[in-house]
Image (cartoon, rainbow over the protein chains, first blue to last red):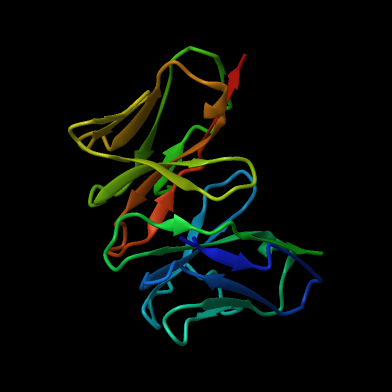
Length: 113
Length: 111
């Protein structure tokens, strides 16, 4: 079956612009996670959704970052006033509720010039 | 201190050799432990879960030492296709399902 999909695969933007990154989880997975991976580092947790609600947003670095999942399926990560330091690969993962295994999407490579 | 510490390497391994590496984690309350594999410019994929009793999957063996808070991975009879970054992952820090990743061990298998 279809895995986790993310769009766009690559995004180049200018400092100060607004971007939206989309994640489409595996069908039936109620848990959805966003991570960010900088070059040479492991992924870092950003936010976790259980259904429509954000169960844990403690990893969001500041209030420029926001994520939604209005219907409990597709999620959008929104970054306002982008900074060069936001350049990274943004990974989305999903799992069944309470499931240990998280399945990752291919990521969105964000470059802020 | 980072939640999961790994020495990134790289680890240059002759084909057919055995390579072992480990990581340490800081929170003794961590619940679950994994090794993920990440190929260049690809997403992480679960390689195996890690249990205190140790577990083996073909040429791969994983061990967990809760007392010392470290996790190990051993790869026997290395293949060229084993070249990848191996990420040590801990779940349950902070009381939810989020995963905490190490930097990863970069393994390069040389013919």
